[in-house]
Image 1 (cartoon, rainbow, N blue to C red):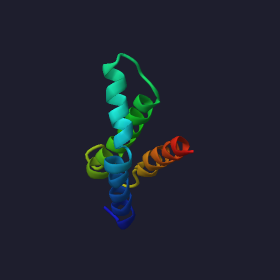
Image 2 (image 1 turned 90 degrees about the horizontal axis):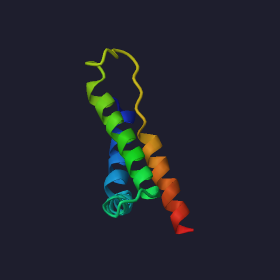
Image 3 (image 1 turned 60 degrees about the vertical axis):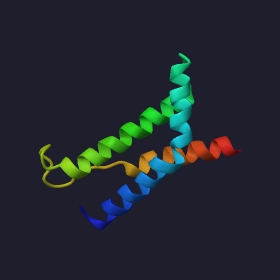
Length: 89
């Protein structure tokens, strides 16, 4: 892992474990109620991006990617950030 990947995973982990908590709570409540709202979409999308990036960061060599590989931590951070800003205003 290089320094950029370390910074990316640290910042994305903070966002996923702190700023995304209201989305996770809203998604769980929505699914329990039998509906799917925006919280479900944001939660599943950003969690999928985050988990894919973590997997590729640690296991990219086992997938046959010896050279360059792509992680998308910034995408999950930006989606959560923009939706959070939208809900504030």
